[in-house]
Length: 260
Image 1: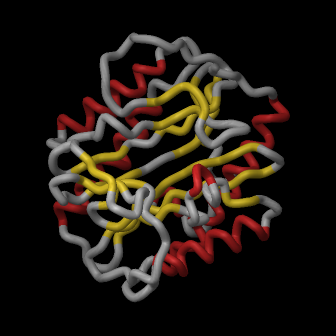
Image 2 (image 1 turned 60 degrees about the horizontal axis):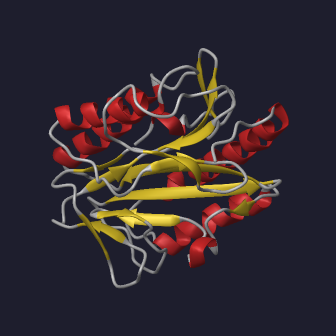
Image 3 (image 1 turned 180 degrees about the vertical axis):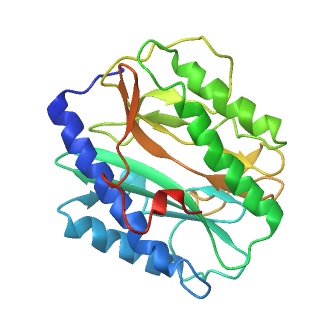
């Protein structure tokens, strides 16, 4: 069932989203060679707890990590560990925070040291695809308008999107209806309404779209071993557009939203 949120509920989600953004900001100085993904997790969890929230992903469906840390060809659900970041890596950090029972969810892909131009282009296109999709996030439009815009932009640049992983509704649960695919025809299905809250998250492969899950039961990787990137924001639909909930209102001196 697709729900719309009241002003009070949106305010809780706005704070949850702000906390997620603060966690992203907190890890930025540590995105360098030699840092472990467990250290990144610890920083995120401490930041979330310090703001009277809890990590949304910890224990979700049995997941043991507080955040997802996915390196290079790992698309989503990478488990924090003692693996150290290396020069030339990219890492997607997917962070969720729950505040007063309401969730915020945002993923960002970070470059570690000297990343090659092809991979930087993959990151750039994935980041841009998120905002291409958000152009259609407006009451009265179809949800599939967002999906179509993302998919077309990605494919025009020679990349692919996996069909089995999508964005989603969000609220009192991390994952609610509706699914938000990253491809498909425009003008179909759900009509967007004011107060709907969704997580829009392009996931993009440099190679073919197929994926496989590793033996840990969580880490999803590109089947052909190609690099992949992932960007996500939680938004609320408004009459004339949308509001990004997973950002620091009024901006920040580090301007993390503009950094890759």
